[in-house]
Image (cartoon, rainbow, N blue to C red):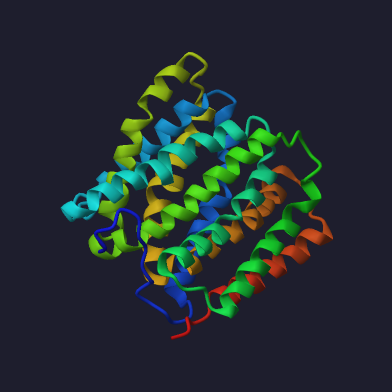
Length: 300
């Protein structure tokens, strides 16, 4: 991998997405699409600092059970892994629950859909190469579609400017993180990198957890929600995302985030008896079209 502190790389697979890539995208869509729902549940009894620390600690614990995750990493990778622990986990995972105290999870979901755009922009700067035109069109359509999916619910709740700013900052950090994760995965494998990044995040967020204990009441619903967030939405999902971007690059791998609002809407229909607007259904179709274009073969 590059010796530079901040660098990225092209994916190892330039072909159109196959069953393996779509399988990884599907898992991420389901897992992260439900994450904001579980964050809302956890916030009923736990402070943001406690939620973040538990997510990192539980995620690291889950991955540590795998012998592959405990494998060695290149000593030159450690500075980037530490950086990844802060920019992909410690900071954004703290910002999201803070922001969701002021804005609705639906708006959080659409703001999170800016991540592929940030990822593509940062990749273009680091690689000194613009995405292929078909991928740019796909990224644009994906964002438009994600916006349409959640547009009918935008009027619900107090969309505080600070909450929106915090989510956008967290999403920008996500776009940066998936870029530096590419060469790390290619040099060391996904599991060893993500395990160590989560350990870094767990250590870094201990002070926030200690401060937040006094504002938390430990209820089974909150603990159960954080368990799902930690094991699946943090430990396993970040390893899956790292594998995906290592294969297809940060720009194309970011399209997984466009499916998050769709999953959130479906969960609302199934578990909360929510209705779906015609505009939302149209938006889902646009998302699928955008994701398809963004997944096409890279140009030589």
